[in-house]
Length: 92
Image 1 (cartoon, one colour):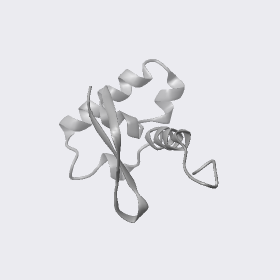
Image 2 (tube, rainbow, N blue to C red; image 1 turned 60 degrees about the vertical axis):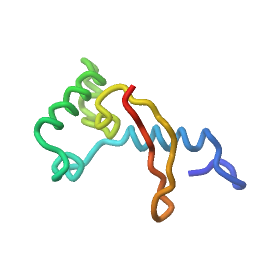
Image 3 (spheres, rainbow, N blue to C red; image 1 turned 180 degrees about the horizontal axis):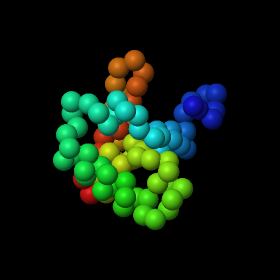
C-alpha cells in the first residue's frame, strides 16, 4: 500500500517487504513438489535459529522469511507479471 497519492516511497517498499516476509506460511508452501525433506529440515533449522526460546514466536510458526534459510542480501526488485514485483536475493 502506498502512503502518498503521487507515488510509492522507499518506506512503502520496505514496509511491504517486511510484511510479506513476516507472514506465516500455509500448507501449500510447505507441501509442494519443489520442497523435499532435506529442504524442509533446513527451513526448520532457520525457524529454530530465528525463534530461539521465544515461545510467542514459536507459536506463530514458520514464516516466509525462514525460506531464505539464513543470511541473504537484497539485490533489488524485478517487475513481474500482473503488476507483481519479485525480490532478487543472493547468499551473504
